[in-house]
Length: 280
Image (cartoon, rainbow, N blue to C red; front, side):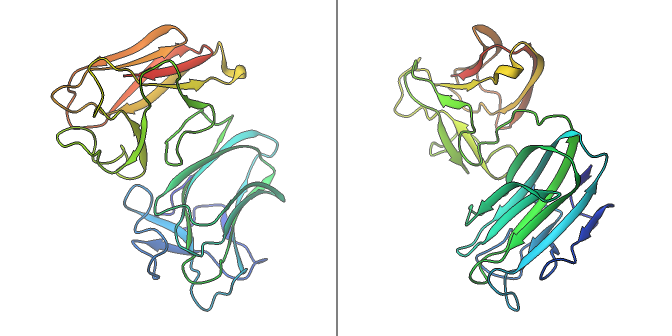
């Protein structure tokens, strides 16, 4: 099941009758300043949001529900949310009556992807609650429910995800960044989607050959499974050195030199070991 709201509510979606007001279909910016997104996720398209301006009152709720069948299946629920404003309230997600996610307060002016492993049970409901004033618009986009557990992933939009760590056996750390890097004629202008955050190595004031290692600890249940590792990389500049990826101690990816001012996608088939690491 997938819905990006570009054609409104998809089949199976409904505004709840057990709430105080309805979610609104939006495109571009919301009607209030200093809150809400300026476009759908990815820079275009439509989205659903709660408008926190009058006549809304603090604490009022809007519920958007999608019917899901069959029940009892282990599934991956993923979606993008945008919660920007000084008085943002809360976004909760329920599977039937069980709360599986709760997010509160200002999360910054960006779309953030969220994933949850859930057991389907009739319906999934997105509940937005109005904060203390009009700067509390909350939006969702790109909702997907697929059978099976969620793939392990990290967009870095909220920093290092669970299981990720800066290595202690290197010379310096990777840096979290949005927008262009501080150095001219090198680095990306944004993350691969055009917004959000990414991890990069800043080569000033580093010395030639210094290494930075970023490691992911593979969940024990996934060790030994044949998997596909997918990631985007950006290697632009006249003096680019090397990006390596290791699966345990096995070298599974290697790229050197200037690859141009573009994000490139890499896919590697591998049998997962205890950790996967990138160094540069």
